[in-house]
Image (cartoon, rainbow, N blue to C red; front, side):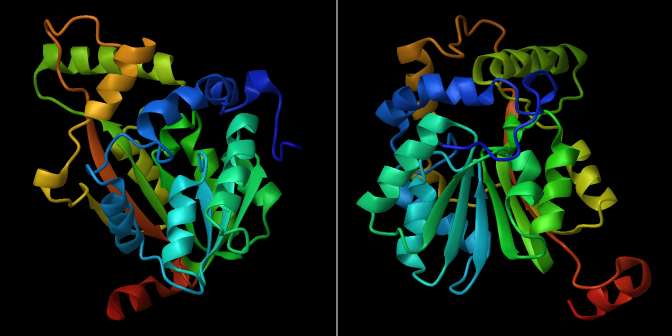
Amino acid sequence: MKLFGKKEEKKSPSAGVADFYNATTDKFLQVYGEVIQAFRTNNVEDYLRYTMESAELQNGQHIIDAGCGVCGPASFFANNLPELKIEACTISEVQAEKAKAKILEKNVAGSVNVTLGDYHFLDEIFSANSFDRVLFLESFGHSKDKPLALDAVKMVLKPGGKVYIKDLFARESSDEWEQLRINQICGQINEAYQYDIGNLHLVVSALRKKGFIINYIKTPKVDMSAFEHLTISNEFQNLFNIGKIESWDNYVFPIDFYEILAEKPAFDPREQMHLYHMNK
């Protein structure tokens, strides 16, 4: 398959991500199943239904699943919203091939299409001003240049379209020692998973500087009795020795999960921002 949007590897904001998933996707599927997300409910379909609601997905929309994995979520969305059209994008050749098979297995080939490409360059892959949503479902953290990714997102969204980000962000503490441990553990996660755990302040600032209107920032609202409590993530780490916690001594939980929904204005914000607030 041809990789769209590929730049020189040493300069790529996704350097190492394709190789990581080419090597580990089968391992993820063995433990996580077709939804490769850490924050989830015991019945993962319940969380996918929540995602549809939270991202405001509707029949008739044209959306991008950026960093789509093997299209487990995309296939679910398509089966539940049969008039939804999804362009799924992954940088991993292995994931792209498995995603194509998943789409056929789920009988959603008419609704979901997979492209091998780097989501930092969505504007080189897809037409401008063409999409109602761009989704990052625990994939945004693989970006080592998040403002660049958001530039591409803004280009492909229609006026009034929205970007939905669900991801892990570095936790903050007023205790200096604890913050140092948080930063250290986040660094270990980044190294193990080819990740770059986001700073919530910097991501929100980047969205605002690029003209997006923040609709909400929230923690996922799920019934905690149905929450999976990251046991799958721990099983994966222990089984394959990827990001394994070697000692619980002095361990602190390093992340928070957040959802962000941000809108590309349907008007020139320099001239008509007051209209947005009047019509809310």
